[in-house]
Length: 213
Image (tube, rainbow, N blue to C red):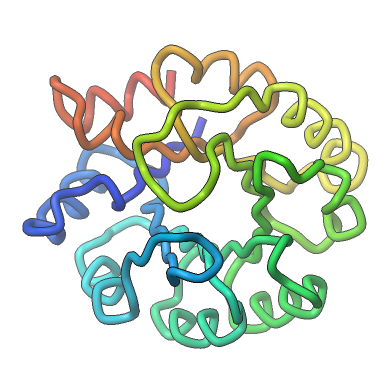
């Protein structure tokens, strides 16, 4: 299990410190939620703050776009050379074109599915993807309760194993020690965790180690 702490739950007054600390604690990716106040009813961070995150991180950035006008935001963040950029299929009229464009920039493309979107929505795109992110909360805010997406993950894993076994399955939303092993059994390769990591009583490393298993 790869672990991608979500910096949305970090202390933004000490953001560089927290980003460096999760990397030192052994995370695999640094998950960055970018929200524009239009696709979701929340507004988070832009290129100035993400640049500061990139400067503090020693692990690849995993940038999750929750925005309208995806290509505009891809162009904003591509110079930071993140490991992954993911966008919501619900918002993109030409997902295959955008996937190809992200890859042409030397970045691994990923697509996100909201809780109500079936995994079959990305079946035709699976050959071209490095990761699919399944939301287990409604996007827009941290700290929400987990929505049961186990069967959806299993269906995606079946498609993935048949079409593109190298494509990772990521889950984001309400991930804790109480559901991580069930998510792993369903087929999750990468977990995004915000509150569980940044608010864990025993520190970042303990939380990351628990999720990794």
